[in-house]
Length: 433
Image (cartoon, rainbow, N blue to C red; front, side, top):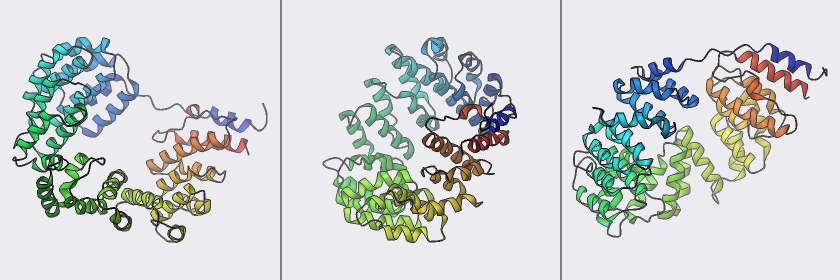
């Protein structure tokens, strides 16, 4: 054996066995249980495994599961071939639980059995109000006028705002635009109560939407937090009456996440372009960590948004979030001057270490590897996961012809035997120096 490969080989010998995985029966028991956290964990593991035997196990338990468990079970069944699930779906059409009938009829209809649509529509009408939003995901890609009629029937004065928003979003997607039937239903429903804001947001984009826009602007000025309950209905490609421009600007200033920023910048740019940079600067100074990242990325891409001197000032500051964000933007501009700062932050304990590990993955430099190896042993799961992801990408780029088999090293960010995996990684790293 070559001397330089011996450390890696020795390290691989000490990799201990990973903890035994739970059986399908145990995971289905947890899916059917009342512990929400264990149910979610079981669902995640079952999604990963996708074993055909799961169909029979779910069939035995699904009728008695709580509603959330049934939702997960139906998602899992969707992953299986229709040949293996057809008999179970057919049985579930007679279930006394409307949600199960909806899920089964929808999947049969999507597989080509259009005669199941009447059963589907009847079950939709029998659903409890608090279950309606959750079943819309089962209805994707089913284009049938009868189904649209059933969903438009949910647009009643008693419908909660989140349900109206979800129904309108679904109908516009499935109908590939705004059908005359849905537009007529929304105009009638605009006189309702709870979901009125969603109807107004939908109507504001119409040619005669001035009155709806004015009423909506007044309502959202009084209760700006409600914007986030209907934000999905604002189409970035549409032009809205000018009265809504301040509403969009205020929403951008208070965006909750990086995703929000990307959606709202387009709206504000279209309706009040002069307000984009000031709103982003406010958000960058006062927003959440995720929103600040989005604001920084947008500012860096806009003329006059962020100059190099602004980024260098952030880099020299004492706020780890701003330092890391500035270093990442500089790197994207082919300026690696922030690397030393990111390395220093990644070596320090603290909540910023997870983000530092992620940002490090973008620097194609050998000095990054030892620091990421240290992060693999951090007490924070996110720091370990980010370091693991970054390390795999970095080593493949640095050594395209000397591949390391990450799958066999034994390291799992959320596993119990991380030490042996890190030892194997360190040994391989030493061997290539």
